[in-house]
Image 1 (cartoon, rainbow, N blue to C red):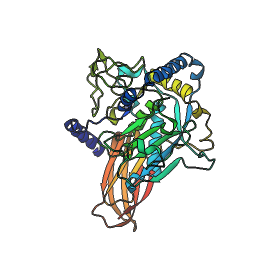
Image 2: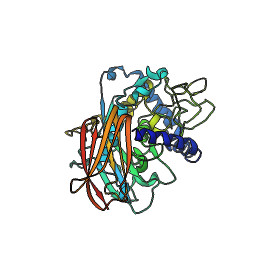
Image 3: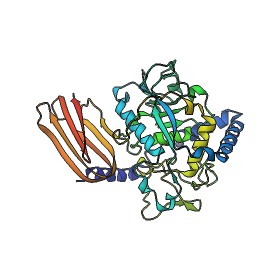
Length: 416
Ligand SMILES: [Zn+2]
């Protein structure tokens, strides 16, 4: 059986049919940029000053390139109203593992980069660690949780404890990532270096596109990869701030081709031929595109240099921060299974990235040790997902056993 592949294929067809209905922006970077440009008379000169610092650092980057990895301490601020929005530590660690894979060239779908672009693909060499020390010196798990009393929040609301949000931890020492239910179909925003005031510096992301989830297009945790790209000085491939379809915009990175499409809601078939615009093949699989998560695979060498330069020049405090000292890093291979919601009323969503081609076995036992559900999948390619329907099951405890390529994982489930 290849249920997850069928499911993904079915979803892809569904996407093609519903592109018109769900073509909201992947992130609100361009809108924010346009608003700033209109309302802040000093905006252009500020951005020019940042650009000249980034370019200057790129020119002088060679001494730093031998350093294999830069480490950025991260704090996640979970803003929640319903229990579903109060994401588990497991969901957060899964997302962090995906982020680290994507920034280290360890993502399992790296082999799907079309031949045309393989030579420019880069392992960025930035590692993200959960903070173990809070700003007041106390121990932390790198996650804050704040109960909100509204249905959804604007991006502006998430930044302040005096409103419905959570104040940033010192943005010179931590990458602040706020997770909330955002209003107006916004999925995320990453602040460009030197652009936001410190209290609003970091990344905001909707909980529905966080980690491995059941969003129809943004389900594999790539929204955070994309937004952290902005935070580290990257633009969308179609231009430095505002979308235009006439090939006039550029992202200030030499090895990403110009393009006139955002690829929003799309997953182009590259096996036959690459889509083209502006006279060249489009790098739709670049993390800074709006392409569906399943078809995003890479940063380029040029983007790597721009991100390292932005980090060293504009965010140097992160590299000397002691916020992660003493914590052991999560093992990406083990952190990539997502099971939830738990407790559940009915549907239990189970998913995982796989290392290459793998087999998966799933069994569920009741408290008497009797098998109440059993299934197995062979030759899954890179990704497993299955929705277990427990709606008709008796309420109570169960034990789920998942075997992925010989590695066993057991979880206690609660049906209510
Ligand atoms: Zn963006």
